[in-house]
Length: 167
Image (cartoon, rainbow, N blue to C red):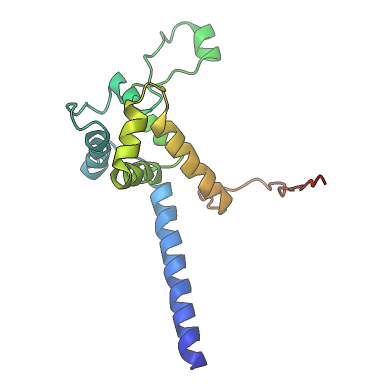
């Protein structure tokens, strides 16, 4: 009886580790414009959130409608602008750099699972950066579970939480 419980527990643990490895690989995989699967996922996100709009090419300012932080580029010869204001690309995949394909998969999951809520956020007049926030929340969740990207991590200070109670 005890052996079957241990076997189930170990099997469950192995599946958890396998899934964490898959997630780490997804996070470490950068978006590639040469991979048709990556392009399909990006355009699927567009078609789910903006079904009545024609799909946009990957490099377009209209990706701002989904909350990507694309903006027109400033002239590169003006070093003051370049120094104080980072030049952003019209390519929405520049927002995915920190999370790789995991960021895009997370956005797509929420868009397909909670379609009406996500469409309301995107279509609302709140100017809410849905895509940028989604990628940042994904990055924070990975940091909470210590999912490093394989680079040598600096030794981080332990977070100390102080709870204050007033009576």
